[in-house]
Image: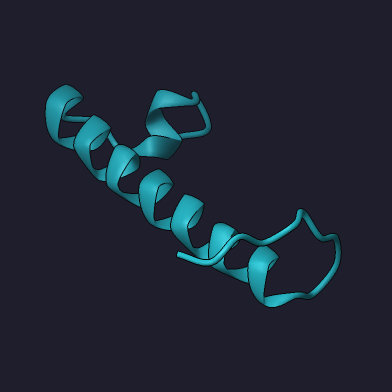
Length: 47
């Protein structure tokens, strides 16, 4: 992995991290739904 400096805006570095964190969030959301038996909206009290 090559060393990259932190960058702001629409750069390859920012887009890679955005995608990685979105995938982690999606997996956490699915795992939470599986463990609690409730959807994300019902956990937040929206339905």
